Image (cartoon, helix red, strand yellow):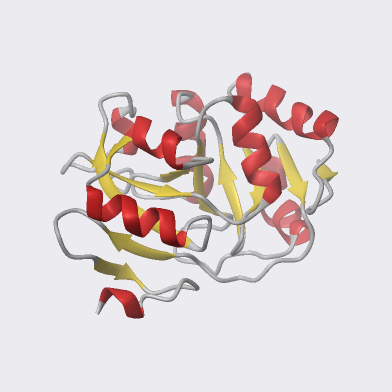
Length: 202
């Protein structure tokens, strides 16, 4: 099912519909500032398992998740002074930052090294969803593992709609991905070059 939401001014009643699905353990596709993502509440073990099945993804590869602001990041990750400065400077934006996980983060979303990937996309719809839910949501590109990301909501509905509870239509997006940067330690490490400029890491 497609649900069209205004990208500039997301309608609260429509955001509430999405959040109701998420609170019941549902899985939805939604827009970010790069491409479409698939997500559920980070506290829905059933939802996370479904996303692994939908994407046909190796369970040794944890998913990242979306927070709304710096205080929420600090609740779910350990942030050094250096990392805090970079996060404050670059977010919201097309980056996934790898940080040391706080104990509240479910094991399913942590690497063996106890790290997590966290995003604050520059997209009003997904931030409104997380805000209304009161908890971060899983973020992973809307595609099968190894295939190109999908930037069109109708294409997401066509490819994955039968396995999802809802596709949020936030308009056409790119088929690009975020840059992934580790902020573990004193120096940034680029793990994936995407949309976000990483020249500051050199």
